[in-house]
Length: 250
Image (tube, rainbow, N blue to C red; front, top):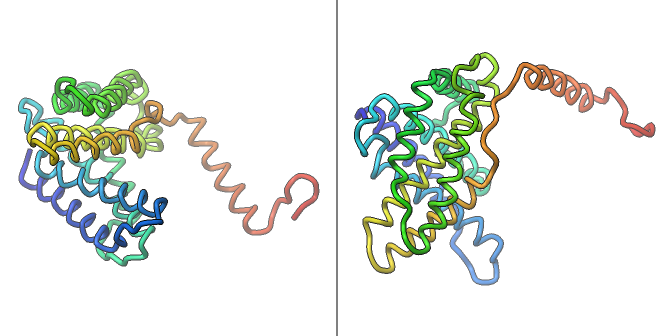
């Protein structure tokens, strides 16, 4: 992986670190809040693990590594926004919605190339490695199923018209990233021992559970894009006091 891509990943992780600094400490009797705080801290742990083991470290995947790394950075930035929304912490310097869309469009347009889509899936497979023993197998199984899901929907994305698929590209970018981030945590667990390894395994299990149990990411179609416009127009008119709901309510 290039030094530029690694520095981008490091910047994304640093932003999440700064956002997570605003989280309150865990407190007894506040279990619901503690669960939310723990999930945000696990997002941070995954970002740290990805920086420590950047995409392409397995070798032989130089063309796919920048795309996977871009997906990771996009997901980490989303985690920054989520953390900020929970804490009210102000963090300047993030990308605008338009900038984010342009980046997602660039990634998905590249993934529309069948060979590149396959290379990305191969890199994710190499990063996931063999199924581990013990509790780590639970996280691996979820990530493995998510990766097989990417393969199952290949025809929706690879070779398709990016003019439509970019509309659903957010879910594809996120899925690639979360598989990679789970794999980074599992790799970190393999490299450690004792209680430390056990904690990383637990983080990987929760991360996979939180992010990878959804169905395979489906690409948008021309019909979906049309309905998006119709729904946006309807919601805009409705919120402006336009069409009344059924039954005559305003």
